[in-house]
Amino acid sequence: MDLESIYKYYTENYLIDTDTRNIRQNSMFFALKGENFNGNMFAEKALSFGASYAVIDEAEYKTDDRIILVDDALHTLQRLANYHRKKLSIPIFGLTGSNGKTTTKELINAVLSKKYRTTATQGNLNNHIGVPLTLLSMTPETEIGIVEMGANHQKEIAFLSSICEPDYGYITNFGKAHLEGFGGVEGVKKGKSELYTFLRAHKKTAFINPHDSIQVEKTKDIKKVVFLESITYLGLNPYVKLSYKNDTIQSNLIGKYNYYNIAIACTVGHFFKVNHLDIKKAIENYIPDNNRSQVIQKGSNTIILDAYNANPSSMIAALENFNAMTFKSKTVILGDMFELGSDSEKEHQFIAKLAGKFSFDCCLFVGKHFSKVSTNPNFFKNFDDLYDSLKNNPLQHQSILIKGSRGMRLERLLEIIN
Image (cartoon, rainbow, N blue to C red):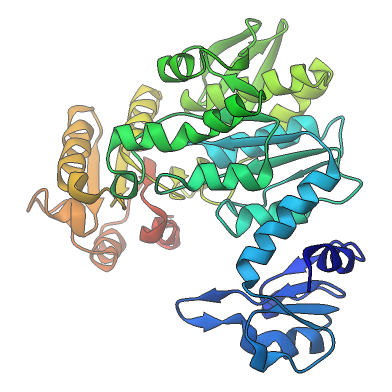
């Protein structure tokens, strides 16, 4: 079936699903494949659960007139998303970066939604499947789309940009993330800058942080918007406080690094003519969740939970920020950083040494990478060993920073911290 015909079916309800466990009534199901599953096998089930159509790419599963056979279901999903993006004819704001993508996306969405009907990436659905799904979640009522793009190797941002065709773009930073896939720090810079390449080629607009020399250098020949001069950092208490148009904004975000995320949200809001008082309200009402810089009070302990992700750049920022806080007693619990390739041992050694330089009461490290750094009892090979240690020696009256890569699932420690 040709793409235009599939698009006609899609526009009956503007609903796309890829998981039969979460089928919505009258959606179009796409049978995607993974290492351990074949979505084609669930086409009939999707229809029985309420889907109007199912798109498959294996002929043996075409057992119903509502099942649409294509050459490649994933490729069709991506083409359909780009076709829809063109039909929408709305501003699309694309963003990527090593750290802070999701928080920045959420802040921008909070600000713009004060004036516009926005549709933004849900959670971190920012890959070759998530970006198409984000675009296809936009309806004729959507006035501005906000698309987060993630990558762990070169050419990926270029591909995602070709699907969502952003009119505006922002790169949060160029840090030490996914070094294995990108081939080092220079590879990260090159890979993330593929967004700039798209904006430049299509004469679109980049938003930049003027305090980031890499952003400034790589956007010399691109139409750009820089942070507003009226945004001033006022410090931490422990949350970021800033001044915007002579008004004080008290955020619910910790860490000076989040100042830049807030500043770009204010700048984007100003650019799209959102009232400055609405911008202030949007920032102040935003509360992080999903293990991102959450401040949690449990018993006598104050916990800063930042266990959603970690890389050397974000680890350094988190440690420096925690050190600057005025808490009396501080404990740091750090988990392994993943996807660092040949730099892994060196980077874990550096972070462990850096943590030791600060005046923290206690530093605990967990994971196979950190355990290679030292045989010190504070270095645990696995989560269970750390869990048992803390259960037998409970922390009391401490401020605790918990940070590690998503795969470490360090939020499980909340069960035993009281």
